Length: 112
Image (cartoon, rainbow, N blue to C red; front, top):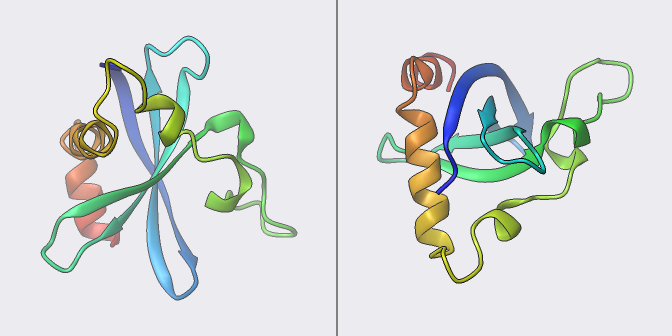
């Protein structure tokens, strides 16, 4: 299981008429220690982790300087697959751990 060392809310993005929160996550993962996790609010007040990319893969949107979720490869399949992982269950658990870290839930509630 990947350890979350730090998490901080960065911004809200809009794509396809939906709002997403971008959260920077520092982990103990050697290959990509800094990740960007993207969440959307579900109808029941929960937050769903929809994408995870390496921070260095994020690119500025033309002319705006705003990072966007489509820039990098979604690493969730790599991170949460294999014999020691349960795929979607691990992904959902990782998302819950990020949301519960520090003031992330409060930030998501406020911004989404």
